[in-house]
Image (cartoon, rainbow, N blue to C red; front, side, top):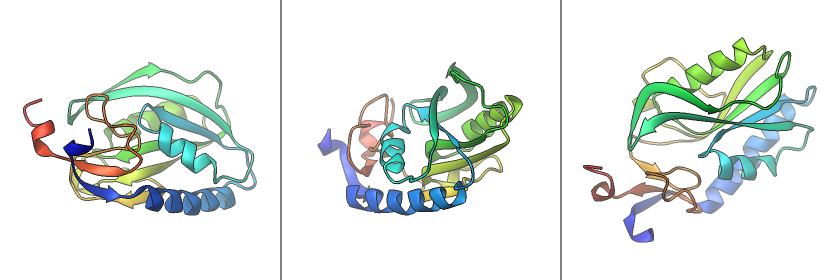
Length: 179
């Protein structure tokens, strides 16, 4: 597995430091409310766990599972595989995402959450890849802006592998070309 990573793009230490900063900012911004923090499965799990250790206000957590990728490409067809287990009517919602790539998934999820009655919907993403954006959407909180490389680790996968790497790395092309 480690031999397939061409380069470590963001270290475990850098991720932990950035999560401390983001947690402090989110705690300040949501100090007068109890946000519902919604992790998008499966990629957000390591980031959400690290981030939540640094959020110092009351919050509630939820998860959604959405699918839009096949291999390395976003298909644009966002499917809800697991919906929320509770109502979010009149709640402030913070979506936790591993990466904002084309933006199609977040656009659909935000629309869905507003249709479910959310008061506000904001996004915190570990990674932002603006060169791939195909829709007008931005995360309010971003860990790192990255170049247009295929990355894995810290929740990000290729065909369900590499999520458990403690850092974000660039996957060698030969691992996914033709897959």
